Length: 364
Image 1 (cartoon, helix red, strand yellow):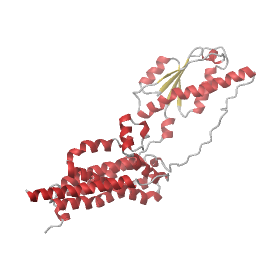
Image 2 (cartoon, rainbow, N blue to C red):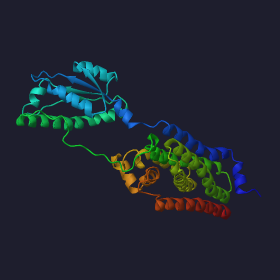
Image 3 (cartoon, rainbow, N blue to C red):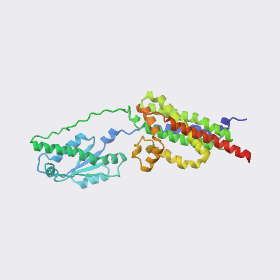
Image 4 (cartoon, helix red, strand yellow):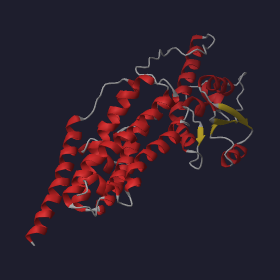
């Protein structure tokens, strides 16, 4: 009499069900962690176009002093343009990322008691990083130039030379510092790969065992995920360790992702066994919305309201928090309750559905 494992090996999808989860972990982790974004490099390559129309009588022009202050305080590349039309054309062609325009009466208004306006022109047709940085510039310019003008007016009242130094200096302390560029996206990559490899592995295992006898397939769906997710998690942990150069996180990366993957696999397989492959209509969106739901790319509160409602009901972000605790040493750990509940529900549905079907077949 063939054993359940031998019966499983005769399936056409046997190799795919065993190998694909590990391949997903390798491919996605390599491509995501070997070319991480460098925030400092992105900021230093942001190109700010400045149009100075100031025709004031002061020397040097207040706008010129403001431009020098901006150039010193912001990590951007700065380009000067004679008029707004030339600058807009450069922005349209992607040669610059944003435009700030100083009006003709800037110096005169700066030395008076009146408010003054400067114009910022952005565009959403550029890269995502440029668009995100540019969207924050109006408030940044407003704060910086307001402080500059206030200092200038105070110096005028006191009849002293203006001080170009900022009156407040910031002392920066980083509580959990990334050890490499790859460390920063690692929690997201680990979270997303865990969900993706688990979902695809569960689908392949479900299809590969569908023609097996009822109790045999329940046994295989219980045992095989432990092995396949172990291999997939090992591949993920190895890539994370090599790319982040954090050798000390290898074991915990492997252990955390293995435990999470097994519990999710059992849960998915239990759902598939009960409802069928049509349950992918719900599972697939949950997996691909993990950049928002996991709390690793953006805070859950910054997600669209309907996603925030889902994430507040089911704490998907607890998995992202667990991976952050591994990479950065921050507070957090495995969400034992939620993982245990998922594993129990999945195993129960897996075995109960097959036992129920077996009894119904014998009765008829």
